[in-house]
Length: 101
Image 1 (tube, rainbow, N blue to C red):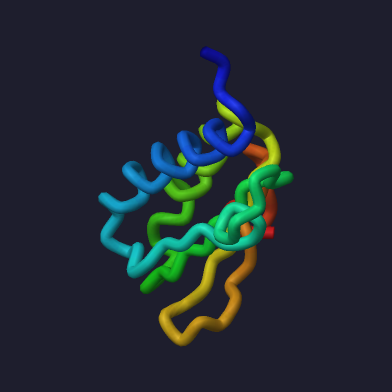
Image 2 (image 1 turned 90 degrees about the vertical axis):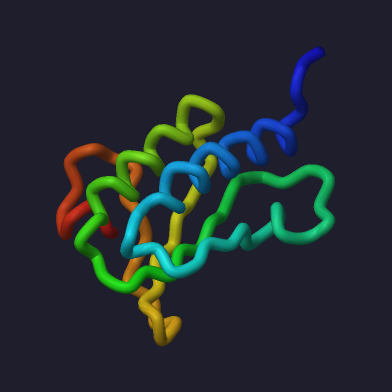
């Protein structure tokens, strides 16, 4: 049976979450945007990560880019423990500012 986009995005989110949850800098992760609501036809996958520091940004970026094997429409937004925005993960392997754009 072929998976629909919602199932594909959930699988990508689950795999990403399993990987980043092992990082010591991660405080919290949440699905946001259309996937967080009851939209049966989400356009993309938006994830918010609250981190203690950016020491593991390379690993977070690597895991985020691996979601492209499921679907290319993803965004990973980073916030500090005070919920101040730090930026988002860059889709390209070679990005300025330590993979945050």
